[in-house]
Length: 80
Image 1 (tube, helix red, strand yellow):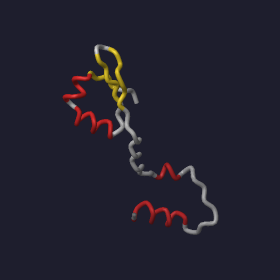
Image 2 (tube, one colour):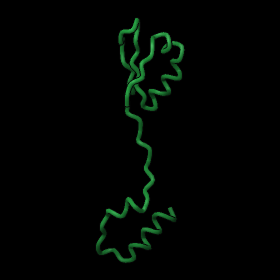
Image 3 (cartoon, one colour):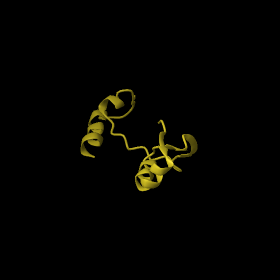
Image 4 (cartoon, one colour):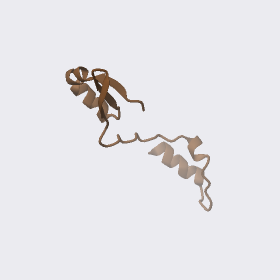
């Protein structure tokens, strides 16, 4: 992710908005008189959103020794 460049004045005026964006994982480089002053980065990386799996994801998996595998997968995928 590329850091967005903002000025000190913009940082002061939009601190709440910038805080929310940093909390979501965005980064900023703050400049003063056209020179980089400091960088704002998240202290903790944002949590990765839970991925929803499709049947294509399960195609790569190989199972052995499980009876009624298709029915078990259907129960997990469609009933949960």
